Length: 92
Image (cartoon, rainbow, N blue to C red; front, side, top):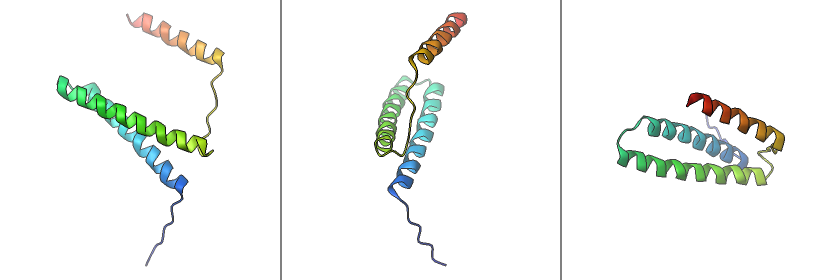
């Protein structure tokens, strides 16, 4: 039986974005668990590259109207910042 799957540009970009997010997570874990400074440096470079690619895909999707984001309210940003600053102070 022959299947002719047709993927739209949106399908492909959704898949690419999901893949980049998974890779970023994996590289972040590898980085957090590595102790060799040379390896850590290389992983940081790869992670940065992956984040740039992820943002480019996201931004393209956003521009095409396929990924809608809501702008944060400044009060919400300030509240979150204060909350996490307080948490950081408690950890010290």
